[in-house]
Length: 350
Ligand code: KG4
Ligand code: ZN
Image (cartoon, rainbow, N blue to C red; front, top):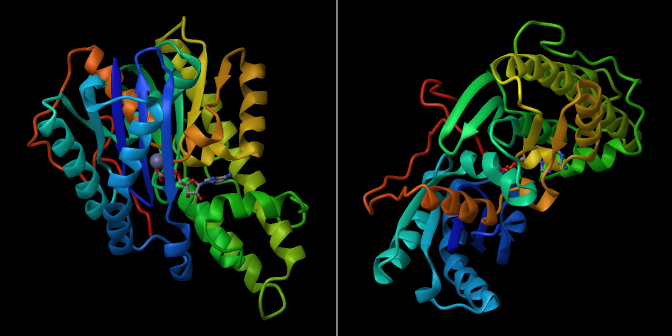
């Protein structure tokens, strides 16, 4: 089985070829950082135009790198949501066109399912597992029971975690994209200098909240001398913010592990996925939690955590194997929660 995957839901244009043995035969990711940097965030219209400009070339490139023709494909998978509508339409329409022209099955993939199943591509994680999904638009703890079978244990009641990283970076003058900038600044910082809150810490359940933490960072900045935040202050605040986020993630994940285990006594794996899972401090803290709780932590390599098309192609492989495929009338879905009962938050890129 060989599947072409296409990802255009936010600010990465990506294409990949993945096979049924979980081998990434070829992949290409084009980040639009330079286009969006002047605006300090993703501008939907610019993103859609950039996808349109680059996607065909990326597909041709991965097909050539994999050394295959369209006749060798078993299917075409494209992200259908959640995400920015303009970008989704570009990827979805392109994927449908390739599938239609070459008479191939088409798979309309949920971007979050791509993240959720990425640990099976990288590490062969077996169902069921507990998933901590931390991305630009989400922060959730879910039990992944199988392909298309997700049970949500907790979610953010306000901001997404990646959004909190990005806004903190902006307030500190660290630029865009925020997550990696906060992580880099935090390396030089003293996490104990500013006393920042740990929202939800010690509470029952597995929900998250980040808006109070963001406000606390803003107040801390307001207490500093006027003018741009100095490198020292930015490093200390970045370190304090990251430590607070890590404490919260560990606390909420500990509760979720207990709930997961009581429902699935044989379950022994915690997976962390999504762009924020590229953060080394968070990975180390979650590894320590997993060791203390006696579960294995699976954290896909950072390039598979941030947006990419290999995870979309792989979700296509998994669905195709189960005999699932979608019609060419599959819609783009700006909102598309993984668990149908939830009606989850919109994925916010800006
Ligand atoms: O999964 P992703 O690439 O896109 C979405 O599906 O949203 O996640 C993007 C988010 C952004 O908010 C970005 O700042 C954050 O992931 N991120 C990080 C790191 N790398 C990316 N956050 C913290 N530390 C990082 N190293
Ligand atoms: Zn993502």
